[in-house]
Image (cartoon, rainbow, N blue to C red; front, side, top):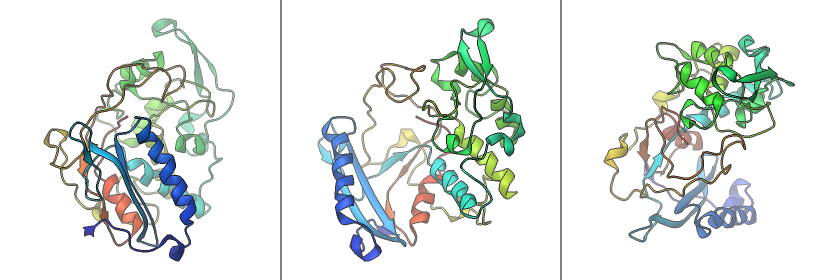
Length: 300
């Protein structure tokens, strides 16, 4: 695979160059405001890169700039692949974004929502509205992660053995049923909270397509076998030229539901990670897949 480079003008593939410039300015503000050290932004259509921008530093302390060959630490990139697989089913008319999740996974019928309290004094009520497929795709389903340790509901996840988001000794179906037995942190569609929702979406895909979501997309193509190997899987073996791993501490309510502030302190995410160098590939989807197949655990 060749090094990432712009291959075609945006207009040649039907993209709006002015809109892409606005996108650059928008993301650059995250760097200029100190929210990100740097970024690489690439937009491709029809397998050809039509827009490529780098901005900021890959190593703040050393003052080294982001380049098109910068190595990036990646997390949770199975999520976009899962969402694309779901959208393929929507495109085929086999799934709707407005389907109640319970229509495909009956365990999610009669969900209950957290009200107050914790432990033995935790109170819940029946959900006023059903969890929808679109809620899974936008992390507004009311689900959470056990490792947050900042809300009574995530404590229930830990008690259920879901510390790593996967039920030990179980498959995806069993794990998702364990989620369904727990109360929601909030009413579906009312708040945002990064969660196990994409795992549930993966189970919906399995049921609708009849294929294991860990091995195949809805059209039967094998996802992992098509994906290149990352430069390195070990966070401890950060390759030379990769960004320094620093993050701005989260402030109360900055990235999760208002019931789950988790304020202060550096971001520390459990799970596997890999280092990945963006490259020009034969198709845009292959580039996405190269990231996705090598993130195997939840992260922030």
